[in-house]
Image (cartoon, rainbow, N blue to C red; front, side, top):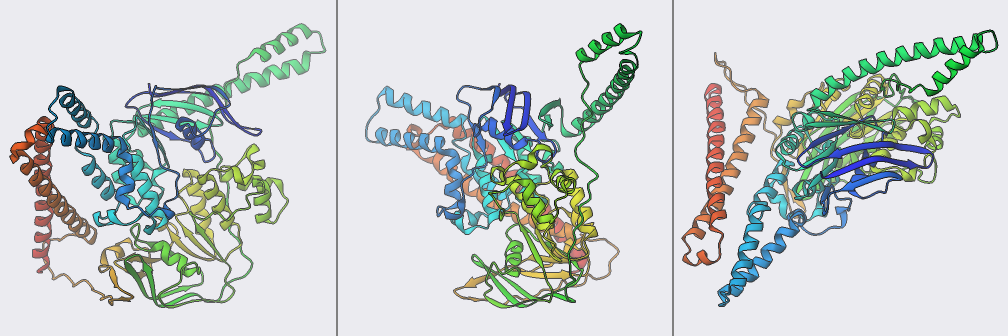
Length: 638
Protein backbone atom coordinates (compact mmCIF):
# COMPACT_ATOMS: atom_id res chain seq x y z
CA UNK A 1 0.00 0.00 0.00
CA UNK A 2 1.37 3.42 -1.01
CA UNK A 3 -1.05 5.63 0.93
CA UNK A 4 -4.37 5.41 2.75
CA UNK A 5 -6.90 7.88 4.11
CA UNK A 6 -9.09 6.69 6.97
CA UNK A 7 -12.03 8.93 7.93
CA UNK A 8 -10.14 12.05 6.83
CA UNK A 9 -11.84 15.41 7.25
CA UNK A 10 -10.73 18.86 6.16
CA UNK A 11 -12.28 22.25 6.85
CA UNK A 12 -11.74 25.77 5.57
CA UNK A 13 -13.49 27.95 8.12
CA UNK A 14 -17.11 26.81 8.24
CA UNK A 15 -16.83 24.83 5.01
CA UNK A 16 -16.18 21.09 5.36
CA UNK A 17 -14.36 20.12 2.15
CA UNK A 18 -13.74 16.45 3.04
CA UNK A 19 -16.15 14.46 5.23
CA UNK A 20 -14.85 11.13 6.48
CA UNK A 21 -12.95 10.17 3.31
CA UNK A 22 -11.68 6.58 3.11
CA UNK A 23 -9.27 5.74 0.30
CA UNK A 24 -6.48 3.23 -0.28
CA UNK A 25 -3.88 3.54 -3.07
CA UNK A 26 -1.77 0.43 -3.67
CA UNK A 27 1.42 -0.07 -5.67
CA UNK A 28 0.83 0.05 -9.41
CA UNK A 29 -2.76 1.34 -9.19
CA UNK A 30 -3.67 4.06 -11.69
CA UNK A 31 -6.35 6.40 -10.39
CA UNK A 32 -8.41 9.14 -12.01
CA UNK A 33 -9.79 11.60 -9.44
CA UNK A 34 -12.86 13.36 -10.85
CA UNK A 35 -15.67 15.56 -9.58
CA UNK A 36 -17.25 18.98 -10.11
CA UNK A 37 -15.21 22.18 -9.88
CA UNK A 38 -14.66 23.16 -6.26
CA UNK A 39 -15.40 19.69 -4.86
CA UNK A 40 -11.99 19.44 -3.16
CA UNK A 41 -9.89 17.39 -5.62
CA UNK A 42 -6.85 19.67 -5.35
CA UNK A 43 -7.13 19.63 -1.55
CA UNK A 44 -7.11 15.83 -1.60
CA UNK A 45 -3.96 15.80 -3.76
CA UNK A 46 -2.24 18.30 -1.46
CA UNK A 47 -3.00 16.07 1.54
CA UNK A 48 -1.50 13.05 -0.25
CA UNK A 49 1.56 15.09 -1.19
CA UNK A 50 2.08 16.27 2.39
CA UNK A 51 1.59 19.92 1.43
CA UNK A 52 -1.43 20.34 3.68
CA UNK A 53 -2.61 18.96 7.02
CA UNK A 54 -5.93 17.22 7.58
CA UNK A 55 -8.21 18.15 10.49
CA UNK A 56 -9.47 14.71 11.43
CA UNK A 57 -9.06 11.03 10.65
CA UNK A 58 -5.78 9.41 9.71
CA UNK A 59 -3.42 9.64 6.74
CA UNK A 60 -1.11 6.65 6.37
CA UNK A 61 1.86 6.61 4.03
CA UNK A 62 4.29 3.81 3.23
CA UNK A 63 7.66 4.12 4.90
CA UNK A 64 10.06 6.29 2.85
CA UNK A 65 7.27 6.94 0.32
CA UNK A 66 8.49 9.25 -2.46
CA UNK A 67 5.79 11.42 -4.03
CA UNK A 68 6.21 13.34 -7.30
CA UNK A 69 4.10 16.38 -8.20
CA UNK A 70 4.50 19.26 -10.64
CA UNK A 71 6.93 21.64 -8.88
CA UNK A 72 5.49 24.90 -7.60
CA UNK A 73 8.69 26.89 -8.21
CA UNK A 74 8.63 29.73 -10.74
CA UNK A 75 11.03 29.17 -13.65
CA UNK A 76 10.94 32.83 -14.73
CA UNK A 77 14.10 33.57 -12.73
CA UNK A 78 15.87 30.28 -13.41
CA UNK A 79 18.91 30.58 -15.70
CA UNK A 80 19.91 26.92 -15.89
CA UNK A 81 19.11 24.96 -19.05
CA UNK A 82 15.97 22.91 -19.47
CA UNK A 83 18.13 19.75 -19.56
CA UNK A 84 19.82 20.66 -16.26
CA UNK A 85 16.43 21.33 -14.69
CA UNK A 86 14.96 18.02 -15.86
CA UNK A 87 18.06 16.13 -14.72
CA UNK A 88 17.20 17.16 -11.16
CA UNK A 89 14.60 14.39 -11.29
CA UNK A 90 17.52 11.93 -11.39
CA UNK A 91 19.53 13.33 -8.47
CA UNK A 92 19.88 9.90 -6.87
CA UNK A 93 21.07 8.35 -10.14
CA UNK A 94 23.59 11.14 -10.73
CA UNK A 95 24.97 10.79 -7.20
CA UNK A 96 25.40 7.04 -7.71
CA UNK A 97 27.09 7.67 -11.05
CA UNK A 98 29.52 10.11 -9.40
CA UNK A 99 30.28 7.58 -6.67
CA UNK A 100 30.90 4.85 -9.27
CA UNK A 101 33.17 7.18 -11.22
CA UNK A 102 35.25 7.78 -8.09
CA UNK A 103 35.53 4.02 -7.53
CA UNK A 104 36.60 3.50 -11.15
CA UNK A 105 39.25 6.17 -10.68
CA UNK A 106 40.51 4.42 -7.55
CA UNK A 107 40.60 1.12 -9.42
CA UNK A 108 42.52 2.69 -12.30
CA UNK A 109 45.06 3.97 -9.77
CA UNK A 110 45.61 0.47 -8.42
CA UNK A 111 42.96 -0.06 -5.77
CA UNK A 112 41.85 -3.65 -6.42
CA UNK A 113 40.65 -4.50 -2.92
CA UNK A 114 37.59 -6.69 -2.57
CA UNK A 115 35.74 -3.91 -0.72
CA UNK A 116 36.20 -1.53 -3.67
CA UNK A 117 35.14 -4.17 -6.21
CA UNK A 118 32.07 -5.05 -4.13
CA UNK A 119 31.11 -1.37 -3.76
CA UNK A 120 31.38 -0.85 -7.52
CA UNK A 121 29.32 -3.96 -8.25
CA UNK A 122 26.66 -2.88 -5.76
CA UNK A 123 26.31 0.57 -7.36
CA UNK A 124 26.18 -0.94 -10.86
CA UNK A 125 23.39 -3.26 -9.77
CA UNK A 126 21.50 -0.31 -8.24
CA UNK A 127 21.87 1.73 -11.42
CA UNK A 128 20.62 -1.19 -13.49
CA UNK A 129 17.40 -1.38 -11.50
CA UNK A 130 16.85 2.37 -11.11
CA UNK A 131 17.20 3.65 -14.66
CA UNK A 132 20.89 4.49 -14.47
CA UNK A 133 21.48 3.36 -18.05
CA UNK A 134 18.28 4.76 -19.60
CA UNK A 135 17.63 8.13 -17.97
CA UNK A 136 19.13 10.17 -20.83
CA UNK A 137 16.90 8.38 -23.34
CA UNK A 138 13.90 8.80 -21.02
CA UNK A 139 14.60 12.53 -20.71
CA UNK A 140 14.79 13.00 -24.48
CA UNK A 141 11.60 11.03 -25.12
CA UNK A 142 9.73 13.07 -22.51
CA UNK A 143 11.07 16.35 -23.87
CA UNK A 144 10.02 15.46 -27.41
CA UNK A 145 6.67 14.07 -26.26
CA UNK A 146 5.83 17.36 -24.57
CA UNK A 147 6.27 19.19 -27.86
CA UNK A 148 9.84 20.51 -27.69
CA UNK A 149 12.72 20.11 -30.13
CA UNK A 150 15.96 18.64 -28.78
CA UNK A 151 17.87 21.88 -29.48
CA UNK A 152 15.58 23.54 -26.91
CA UNK A 153 17.16 21.39 -24.20
CA UNK A 154 20.09 23.80 -23.89
CA UNK A 155 17.95 26.94 -23.66
CA UNK A 156 17.69 28.55 -20.20
CA UNK A 157 14.39 27.91 -18.42
CA UNK A 158 13.53 31.60 -18.21
CA UNK A 159 13.63 31.93 -22.02
CA UNK A 160 10.51 29.78 -22.44
CA UNK A 161 6.95 31.12 -22.45
CA UNK A 162 4.67 30.60 -19.45
CA UNK A 163 2.91 27.62 -21.05
CA UNK A 164 6.23 26.07 -22.07
CA UNK A 165 7.56 26.44 -18.53
CA UNK A 166 4.51 24.58 -17.24
CA UNK A 167 5.25 21.74 -19.68
CA UNK A 168 8.87 21.62 -18.52
CA UNK A 169 7.72 21.35 -14.88
CA UNK A 170 5.28 18.61 -15.90
CA UNK A 171 8.19 16.78 -17.54
CA UNK A 172 10.16 17.03 -14.28
CA UNK A 173 7.30 15.33 -12.42
CA UNK A 174 6.88 12.61 -15.07
CA UNK A 175 10.61 11.79 -15.01
CA UNK A 176 10.84 11.63 -11.22
CA UNK A 177 11.26 7.93 -10.25
CA UNK A 178 8.81 8.32 -7.36
CA UNK A 179 6.56 5.67 -5.82
CA UNK A 180 3.44 7.82 -6.29
CA UNK A 181 2.81 10.42 -8.99
CA UNK A 182 0.16 13.12 -8.39
CA UNK A 183 -0.99 15.26 -11.32
CA UNK A 184 -3.56 18.06 -11.12
CA UNK A 185 -5.03 18.88 -14.58
CA UNK A 186 -1.80 18.02 -16.47
CA UNK A 187 -3.44 18.57 -19.87
CA UNK A 188 -4.06 22.28 -19.33
CA UNK A 189 -1.00 23.41 -21.30
CA UNK A 190 -0.88 20.57 -23.83
CA UNK A 191 -2.24 20.36 -27.35
CA UNK A 192 -4.01 17.29 -28.77
CA UNK A 193 -0.80 15.49 -29.76
CA UNK A 194 0.84 16.13 -26.41
CA UNK A 195 -2.25 15.01 -24.48
CA UNK A 196 -2.29 11.81 -26.52
CA UNK A 197 1.39 11.27 -25.69
CA UNK A 198 0.74 11.88 -21.99
CA UNK A 199 -2.07 9.32 -22.03
CA UNK A 200 0.30 6.75 -23.56
CA UNK A 201 3.01 7.66 -21.03
CA UNK A 202 0.66 7.07 -18.11
CA UNK A 203 -0.66 3.90 -19.72
CA UNK A 204 2.89 2.46 -19.84
CA UNK A 205 3.95 3.76 -16.41
CA UNK A 206 4.58 1.05 -13.78
CA UNK A 207 4.13 3.55 -10.93
CA UNK A 208 1.03 4.26 -8.92
CA UNK A 209 -0.49 7.59 -9.86
CA UNK A 210 -3.50 9.83 -9.25
CA UNK A 211 -4.46 12.21 -12.04
CA UNK A 212 -7.12 14.92 -11.81
CA UNK A 213 -8.50 15.61 -15.27
CA UNK A 214 -11.67 15.61 -17.34
CA UNK A 215 -9.75 14.99 -20.57
CA UNK A 216 -10.78 11.71 -22.24
CA UNK A 217 -7.55 11.66 -24.31
CA UNK A 218 -5.56 11.31 -21.10
CA UNK A 219 -7.97 9.02 -19.25
CA UNK A 220 -8.75 6.59 -22.09
CA UNK A 221 -6.99 3.32 -21.32
CA UNK A 222 -4.60 4.93 -18.80
CA UNK A 223 -6.47 4.32 -15.53
CA UNK A 224 -7.79 1.20 -13.81
CA UNK A 225 -9.51 2.92 -10.86
CA UNK A 226 -11.68 6.03 -10.58
CA UNK A 227 -12.44 8.10 -7.47
CA UNK A 228 -15.41 10.49 -7.64
CA UNK A 229 -15.50 13.36 -5.13
CA UNK A 230 -18.72 15.26 -4.38
CA UNK A 231 -20.04 17.09 -1.33
CA UNK A 232 -16.99 16.05 0.67
CA UNK A 233 -17.46 12.31 0.13
CA UNK A 234 -15.37 9.99 -2.04
CA UNK A 235 -16.82 7.14 -4.10
CA UNK A 236 -14.37 4.65 -5.59
CA UNK A 237 -14.80 2.41 -8.64
CA UNK A 238 -12.67 -0.37 -10.09
CA UNK A 239 -12.08 -0.37 -13.85
CA UNK A 240 -11.23 2.12 -16.61
CA UNK A 241 -12.98 5.44 -17.13
CA UNK A 242 -15.58 4.04 -19.54
CA UNK A 243 -16.41 1.35 -16.99
CA UNK A 244 -16.71 4.03 -14.28
CA UNK A 245 -19.25 5.94 -16.35
CA UNK A 246 -21.41 2.81 -16.67
CA UNK A 247 -21.05 1.93 -12.96
CA UNK A 248 -21.78 5.50 -11.94
CA UNK A 249 -24.94 5.63 -14.04
CA UNK A 250 -26.15 2.35 -12.48
CA UNK A 251 -25.33 3.61 -8.99
CA UNK A 252 -27.26 6.78 -9.72
CA UNK A 253 -30.35 4.82 -10.80
CA UNK A 254 -30.20 2.59 -7.71
CA UNK A 255 -29.73 5.55 -5.38
CA UNK A 256 -32.50 7.49 -7.06
CA UNK A 257 -34.99 4.62 -6.66
CA UNK A 258 -34.02 4.06 -3.02
CA UNK A 259 -34.12 7.80 -2.30
CA UNK A 260 -37.55 8.27 -3.87
CA UNK A 261 -38.98 5.25 -2.04
CA UNK A 262 -37.61 6.45 1.29
CA UNK A 263 -38.82 10.01 0.74
CA UNK A 264 -42.32 8.67 0.02
CA UNK A 265 -42.21 6.61 3.23
CA UNK A 266 -41.01 9.63 5.25
CA UNK A 267 -43.77 11.83 3.80
CA UNK A 268 -46.48 9.24 4.67
CA UNK A 269 -45.09 8.78 8.17
CA UNK A 270 -44.83 12.51 8.86
CA UNK A 271 -48.41 12.99 7.66
CA UNK A 272 -49.58 10.20 10.02
CA UNK A 273 -47.71 11.82 12.94
CA UNK A 274 -49.17 15.25 12.16
CA UNK A 275 -52.73 13.94 12.02
CA UNK A 276 -52.75 11.62 15.06
CA UNK A 277 -50.12 12.95 17.47
CA UNK A 278 -52.75 14.74 19.57
CA UNK A 279 -55.61 12.28 18.95
CA UNK A 280 -56.65 8.75 19.89
CA UNK A 281 -53.65 7.18 18.12
CA UNK A 282 -51.04 9.19 20.01
CA UNK A 283 -48.98 6.11 20.99
CA UNK A 284 -48.76 4.97 17.38
CA UNK A 285 -47.76 8.46 16.25
CA UNK A 286 -45.00 8.64 18.87
CA UNK A 287 -43.82 5.19 17.89
CA UNK A 288 -43.50 6.30 14.29
CA UNK A 289 -41.58 9.40 15.45
CA UNK A 290 -39.01 7.06 17.03
CA UNK A 291 -38.83 5.05 13.80
CA UNK A 292 -38.10 8.22 11.84
CA UNK A 293 -35.50 9.41 14.33
CA UNK A 294 -33.61 6.11 14.00
CA UNK A 295 -34.02 5.84 10.23
CA UNK A 296 -30.74 5.83 8.33
CA UNK A 297 -31.35 8.31 5.56
CA UNK A 298 -30.53 7.44 1.95
CA UNK A 299 -28.51 10.22 0.38
CA UNK A 300 -29.93 12.12 -2.56
CA UNK A 301 -28.59 11.13 -6.01
CA UNK A 302 -25.30 12.76 -6.91
CA UNK A 303 -25.88 15.82 -9.00
CA UNK A 304 -23.64 18.74 -9.83
CA UNK A 305 -24.90 22.27 -10.51
CA UNK A 306 -26.47 22.49 -13.95
CA UNK A 307 -28.96 24.54 -15.85
CA UNK A 308 -27.23 27.86 -15.08
CA UNK A 309 -27.17 30.39 -17.92
CA UNK A 310 -24.37 32.96 -17.98
CA UNK A 311 -25.39 36.09 -19.93
CA UNK A 312 -22.52 38.23 -21.24
CA UNK A 313 -23.71 41.82 -21.54
CA UNK A 314 -22.19 45.18 -22.42
CA UNK A 315 -23.47 48.75 -22.62
CA UNK A 316 -22.29 50.09 -26.00
CA UNK A 317 -21.45 48.67 -29.42
CA UNK A 318 -17.99 49.13 -30.92
CA UNK A 319 -17.38 50.76 -34.26
CA UNK A 320 -17.32 48.59 -37.39
CA UNK A 321 -13.52 48.18 -37.26
CA UNK A 322 -12.41 46.66 -33.95
CA UNK A 323 -8.74 45.78 -34.59
CA UNK A 324 -6.52 46.68 -37.54
CA UNK A 325 -2.99 45.20 -37.76
CA UNK A 326 -0.46 46.11 -40.44
CA UNK A 327 3.12 44.82 -40.97
CA UNK A 328 3.46 43.69 -37.35
CA UNK A 329 6.67 41.99 -36.22
CA UNK A 330 7.03 40.42 -32.76
CA UNK A 331 10.20 38.98 -31.20
CA UNK A 332 9.92 35.42 -29.80
CA UNK A 333 13.34 34.33 -28.51
CA UNK A 334 15.49 33.41 -31.54
CA UNK A 335 12.47 33.61 -33.89
CA UNK A 336 10.15 36.33 -35.07
CA UNK A 337 6.42 36.37 -35.67
CA UNK A 338 5.40 38.37 -38.74
CA UNK A 339 1.79 39.52 -39.12
CA UNK A 340 1.37 41.39 -42.43
CA UNK A 341 -2.37 42.06 -42.11
CA UNK A 342 -5.23 41.34 -39.71
CA UNK A 343 -8.69 42.90 -39.64
CA UNK A 344 -11.28 42.20 -36.97
CA UNK A 345 -14.80 43.54 -37.50
CA UNK A 346 -17.60 44.07 -34.99
CA UNK A 347 -19.33 40.86 -33.96
CA UNK A 348 -16.74 38.51 -35.48
CA UNK A 349 -15.55 35.54 -33.42
CA UNK A 350 -12.04 34.35 -34.23
CA UNK A 351 -10.27 31.11 -33.35
CA UNK A 352 -6.58 31.85 -32.74
CA UNK A 353 -4.92 28.47 -33.27
CA UNK A 354 -1.38 27.12 -33.43
CA UNK A 355 1.02 24.71 -31.76
CA UNK A 356 2.30 25.44 -28.26
CA UNK A 357 5.09 28.02 -28.47
CA UNK A 358 4.06 29.23 -31.94
CA UNK A 359 3.25 32.74 -30.72
CA UNK A 360 -0.50 32.79 -29.97
CA UNK A 361 -0.13 34.24 -26.48
CA UNK A 362 2.57 36.66 -27.68
CA UNK A 363 0.17 37.97 -30.35
CA UNK A 364 -2.65 38.36 -27.81
CA UNK A 365 -0.39 40.22 -25.41
CA UNK A 366 0.76 42.49 -28.22
CA UNK A 367 -2.87 43.29 -29.11
CA UNK A 368 -3.63 44.34 -25.53
CA UNK A 369 -0.41 46.35 -25.22
CA UNK A 370 1.52 44.05 -22.88
CA UNK A 371 4.23 43.29 -25.49
CA UNK A 372 5.97 45.93 -27.60
CA UNK A 373 6.31 45.04 -31.29
CA UNK A 374 9.61 45.18 -33.18
CA UNK A 375 7.78 46.98 -35.97
CA UNK A 376 4.31 47.54 -37.39
CA UNK A 377 1.03 49.00 -36.23
CA UNK A 378 -1.95 47.91 -34.09
CA UNK A 379 -5.04 50.16 -34.16
CA UNK A 380 -8.11 49.67 -31.99
CA UNK A 381 -11.49 50.99 -33.10
CA UNK A 382 -13.93 53.25 -31.30
CA UNK A 383 -16.04 52.45 -28.22
CA UNK A 384 -13.97 49.35 -27.46
CA UNK A 385 -14.28 47.95 -23.92
CA UNK A 386 -11.84 45.05 -23.85
CA UNK A 387 -11.38 42.23 -21.29
CA UNK A 388 -8.47 39.81 -21.52
CA UNK A 389 -8.31 36.38 -19.86
CA UNK A 390 -4.73 35.13 -19.52
CA UNK A 391 -4.54 32.02 -17.34
CA UNK A 392 -1.17 33.16 -15.95
CA UNK A 393 -2.55 36.47 -14.60
CA UNK A 394 -4.43 36.77 -11.33
CA UNK A 395 -5.66 40.37 -11.07
CA UNK A 396 -8.06 39.76 -8.21
CA UNK A 397 -8.93 41.62 -4.98
CA UNK A 398 -7.20 39.23 -2.56
CA UNK A 399 -8.49 41.05 0.51
CA UNK A 400 -12.18 40.44 -0.19
CA UNK A 401 -14.60 37.49 -0.09
CA UNK A 402 -15.84 35.63 -3.15
CA UNK A 403 -19.38 36.89 -2.55
CA UNK A 404 -18.34 40.55 -2.42
CA UNK A 405 -16.01 40.17 -5.40
CA UNK A 406 -18.72 38.73 -7.67
CA UNK A 407 -21.35 41.11 -6.29
CA UNK A 408 -19.15 44.08 -7.24
CA UNK A 409 -18.62 42.63 -10.71
CA UNK A 410 -22.35 42.05 -11.23
CA UNK A 411 -23.15 45.48 -9.78
CA UNK A 412 -26.07 44.01 -7.86
CA UNK A 413 -26.89 43.15 -4.21
CA UNK A 414 -29.18 40.30 -5.37
CA UNK A 415 -27.96 37.35 -3.29
CA UNK A 416 -29.63 34.69 -5.44
CA UNK A 417 -28.01 36.05 -8.60
CA UNK A 418 -24.56 36.24 -6.97
CA UNK A 419 -24.83 32.72 -5.56
CA UNK A 420 -25.91 31.38 -8.97
CA UNK A 421 -22.75 32.70 -10.61
CA UNK A 422 -20.54 31.42 -7.79
CA UNK A 423 -22.13 27.96 -7.88
CA UNK A 424 -21.70 27.68 -11.65
CA UNK A 425 -17.96 28.23 -11.25
CA UNK A 426 -17.54 25.81 -8.35
CA UNK A 427 -17.86 28.23 -5.42
CA UNK A 428 -21.36 27.40 -4.18
CA UNK A 429 -22.77 27.10 -0.67
CA UNK A 430 -20.68 28.29 2.25
CA UNK A 431 -17.71 28.91 -0.05
CA UNK A 432 -19.21 32.27 -0.94
CA UNK A 433 -17.76 33.79 2.22
CA UNK A 434 -14.30 32.34 1.59
CA UNK A 435 -11.49 34.83 1.03
CA UNK A 436 -10.03 35.18 -2.47
CA UNK A 437 -6.50 34.90 -1.07
CA UNK A 438 -7.19 31.36 0.20
CA UNK A 439 -7.99 29.94 -3.26
CA UNK A 440 -5.76 27.47 -5.05
CA UNK A 441 -4.16 28.31 -8.39
CA UNK A 442 -6.89 26.59 -10.41
CA UNK A 443 -9.63 28.23 -8.33
CA UNK A 444 -8.11 31.68 -8.86
CA UNK A 445 -8.01 30.96 -12.59
CA UNK A 446 -11.76 30.18 -12.56
CA UNK A 447 -12.55 33.30 -10.55
CA UNK A 448 -10.36 35.37 -12.88
CA UNK A 449 -12.28 33.95 -15.87
CA UNK A 450 -15.60 34.81 -14.19
CA UNK A 451 -14.32 38.34 -13.54
CA UNK A 452 -13.42 38.75 -17.23
CA UNK A 453 -16.79 37.42 -18.39
CA UNK A 454 -18.64 39.80 -16.04
CA UNK A 455 -16.58 42.86 -17.04
CA UNK A 456 -19.35 44.11 -19.40
CA UNK A 457 -16.79 44.13 -22.22
CA UNK A 458 -17.79 44.24 -25.87
CA UNK A 459 -14.48 42.64 -26.93
CA UNK A 460 -13.22 39.48 -25.23
CA UNK A 461 -9.74 37.94 -25.65
CA UNK A 462 -9.73 34.51 -24.01
CA UNK A 463 -6.55 32.40 -23.80
CA UNK A 464 -7.44 28.76 -23.01
CA UNK A 465 -10.53 29.61 -20.88
CA UNK A 466 -11.63 25.96 -20.47
CA UNK A 467 -8.45 24.72 -18.77
CA UNK A 468 -9.84 24.74 -15.23
CA UNK A 469 -13.49 23.99 -16.01
CA UNK A 470 -15.27 20.66 -15.67
CA UNK A 471 -17.64 19.27 -18.32
CA UNK A 472 -20.62 21.30 -17.06
CA UNK A 473 -18.52 24.46 -16.93
CA UNK A 474 -17.28 24.01 -20.49
CA UNK A 475 -20.84 23.49 -21.75
CA UNK A 476 -22.03 26.61 -19.90
CA UNK A 477 -19.16 28.71 -21.30
CA UNK A 478 -19.80 27.42 -24.84
CA UNK A 479 -23.47 28.46 -24.68
CA UNK A 480 -22.53 31.87 -23.26
CA UNK A 481 -19.98 32.59 -25.99
CA UNK A 482 -22.37 31.38 -28.69
CA UNK A 483 -24.95 33.91 -27.47
CA UNK A 484 -22.38 36.71 -26.97
CA UNK A 485 -23.18 39.65 -29.31
CA UNK A 486 -19.74 41.24 -29.04
CA UNK A 487 -16.38 40.48 -30.66
CA UNK A 488 -14.26 37.52 -29.58
CA UNK A 489 -10.72 36.19 -30.01
CA UNK A 490 -10.54 32.68 -28.60
CA UNK A 491 -7.50 30.45 -28.02
CA UNK A 492 -8.23 26.78 -27.36
CA UNK A 493 -6.94 23.31 -28.27
CA UNK A 494 -10.50 21.93 -28.19
CA UNK A 495 -11.61 21.78 -31.83
CA UNK A 496 -15.23 20.91 -30.99
CA UNK A 497 -15.42 23.88 -28.62
CA UNK A 498 -14.01 26.24 -31.25
CA UNK A 499 -16.13 24.91 -34.10
CA UNK A 500 -19.31 25.53 -32.09
CA UNK A 501 -18.46 29.20 -31.48
CA UNK A 502 -16.18 30.88 -34.03
CA UNK A 503 -16.69 32.10 -37.60
CA UNK A 504 -13.09 33.09 -38.42
CA UNK A 505 -9.60 31.55 -38.11
CA UNK A 506 -6.20 33.06 -37.42
CA UNK A 507 -3.60 30.29 -37.68
CA UNK A 508 -0.15 30.96 -36.18
CA UNK A 509 2.57 28.71 -37.61
CA UNK A 510 5.91 28.99 -39.34
CA UNK A 511 6.50 32.51 -38.05
CA UNK A 512 3.42 34.05 -39.65
CA UNK A 513 -0.40 34.22 -39.43
CA UNK A 514 -2.83 32.93 -42.05
CA UNK A 515 -6.53 33.77 -41.98
CA UNK A 516 -9.79 32.23 -43.16
CA UNK A 517 -13.40 33.46 -43.14
CA UNK A 518 -14.53 30.25 -41.40
CA UNK A 519 -13.14 27.75 -38.91
CA UNK A 520 -10.26 25.98 -40.71
CA UNK A 521 -7.69 24.07 -38.59
CA UNK A 522 -5.99 22.91 -41.82
CA UNK A 523 -4.49 26.40 -42.15
CA UNK A 524 -1.77 25.22 -39.75
CA UNK A 525 -0.45 22.84 -42.40
CA UNK A 526 0.08 25.64 -44.96
CA UNK A 527 2.50 27.92 -43.12
CA UNK A 528 6.21 28.28 -44.05
CA UNK A 529 9.19 27.72 -41.77
CA UNK A 530 9.74 30.26 -38.93
CA UNK A 531 12.00 33.26 -39.53
CA UNK A 532 15.30 33.29 -37.63
CA UNK A 533 16.52 36.64 -36.35
CA UNK A 534 20.10 37.50 -37.30
CA UNK A 535 21.22 40.23 -34.93
CA UNK A 536 18.45 42.82 -35.06
CA UNK A 537 17.31 42.11 -38.60
CA UNK A 538 15.06 39.30 -39.69
CA UNK A 539 15.02 37.70 -43.12
CA UNK A 540 11.73 38.21 -44.94
CA UNK A 541 9.09 35.52 -45.00
CA UNK A 542 8.35 34.01 -48.37
CA UNK A 543 4.82 32.82 -48.70
CA UNK A 544 4.65 29.44 -50.38
CA UNK A 545 1.28 28.64 -51.82
CA UNK A 546 0.68 24.92 -52.32
CA UNK A 547 0.81 23.89 -55.98
CA UNK A 548 -2.48 22.51 -57.32
CA UNK A 549 -2.48 18.76 -57.72
CA UNK A 550 -2.88 17.46 -61.29
CA UNK A 551 -6.01 15.50 -62.06
CA UNK A 552 -5.54 11.81 -61.36
CA UNK A 553 -7.69 8.75 -60.88
CA UNK A 554 -5.78 7.77 -57.73
CA UNK A 555 -6.43 9.62 -54.49
CA UNK A 556 -3.43 11.15 -52.75
CA UNK A 557 -2.97 12.07 -49.11
CA UNK A 558 -5.14 14.78 -47.57
CA UNK A 559 -3.44 17.86 -46.09
CA UNK A 560 -3.64 16.43 -42.58
CA UNK A 561 -2.39 13.01 -43.69
CA UNK A 562 0.50 14.60 -45.60
CA UNK A 563 1.40 16.72 -42.58
CA UNK A 564 1.38 13.69 -40.27
CA UNK A 565 3.46 11.62 -42.71
CA UNK A 566 6.07 14.37 -42.99
CA UNK A 567 6.21 14.70 -39.20
CA UNK A 568 6.57 10.91 -38.85
CA UNK A 569 9.48 10.96 -41.28
CA UNK A 570 11.27 13.86 -39.53
CA UNK A 571 10.75 12.33 -36.07
CA UNK A 572 11.85 8.88 -37.23
CA UNK A 573 14.92 10.33 -38.97
CA UNK A 574 15.96 12.14 -35.77
CA UNK A 575 15.37 9.00 -33.71
CA UNK A 576 17.41 6.83 -36.12
CA UNK A 577 20.31 9.31 -35.95
CA UNK A 578 20.27 9.39 -32.15
CA UNK A 579 19.95 5.62 -31.70
CA UNK A 580 22.69 4.98 -34.30
CA UNK A 581 25.04 7.32 -32.44
CA UNK A 582 24.27 5.57 -29.13
CA UNK A 583 24.80 2.16 -30.76
CA UNK A 584 28.17 3.30 -32.07
CA UNK A 585 29.21 4.45 -28.59
CA UNK A 586 28.24 1.09 -27.08
CA UNK A 587 30.20 -0.78 -29.76
CA UNK A 588 33.31 1.25 -28.88
CA UNK A 589 32.86 0.37 -25.20
CA UNK A 590 32.58 -3.31 -26.08
CA UNK A 591 35.84 -3.14 -28.07
CA UNK A 592 37.81 -1.49 -25.24
CA UNK A 593 39.94 -4.23 -23.51
CA UNK A 594 40.22 -2.16 -20.31
CA UNK A 595 36.45 -1.84 -20.03
CA UNK A 596 36.16 -5.34 -18.58
CA UNK A 597 37.28 -3.93 -15.24
CA UNK A 598 35.01 -0.90 -15.39
CA UNK A 599 31.70 -1.93 -17.00
CA UNK A 600 28.65 -3.90 -16.01
CA UNK A 601 28.69 -6.19 -19.06
CA UNK A 602 25.27 -7.69 -18.43
CA UNK A 603 23.67 -4.24 -18.34
CA UNK A 604 25.59 -3.15 -21.43
CA UNK A 605 24.52 -6.24 -23.34
CA UNK A 606 20.86 -5.81 -22.34
CA UNK A 607 20.92 -2.16 -23.38
CA UNK A 608 22.66 -3.03 -26.68
CA UNK A 609 20.05 -5.66 -27.58
CA UNK A 610 17.21 -3.32 -26.66
CA UNK A 611 18.86 -0.55 -28.69
CA UNK A 612 19.05 -2.74 -31.80
CA UNK A 613 15.30 -3.47 -31.57
CA UNK A 614 14.47 0.21 -31.09
CA UNK A 615 16.69 1.13 -34.04
CA UNK A 616 15.01 -1.48 -36.24
CA UNK A 617 11.54 -0.13 -35.36
CA UNK A 618 12.67 3.46 -36.01
CA UNK A 619 14.11 2.52 -39.41
CA UNK A 620 10.87 0.75 -40.34
CA UNK A 621 8.89 3.83 -39.30
CA UNK A 622 11.13 6.04 -41.47
CA UNK A 623 10.78 3.70 -44.45
CA UNK A 624 6.97 3.56 -44.14
CA UNK A 625 6.65 7.35 -43.91
CA UNK A 626 9.07 7.86 -46.81
CA UNK A 627 7.21 5.36 -48.99
CA UNK A 628 3.87 7.05 -48.26
CA UNK A 629 5.26 10.46 -49.19
CA UNK A 630 6.92 9.18 -52.37
CA UNK A 631 3.70 7.50 -53.45
CA UNK A 632 1.80 10.72 -52.79
CA UNK A 633 4.37 12.70 -54.79
CA UNK A 634 3.95 10.27 -57.70
CA UNK A 635 0.16 10.68 -57.62
CA UNK A 636 0.47 14.47 -57.57
CA UNK A 637 3.10 14.42 -60.34
CA UNK A 638 5.73 16.15 -58.18
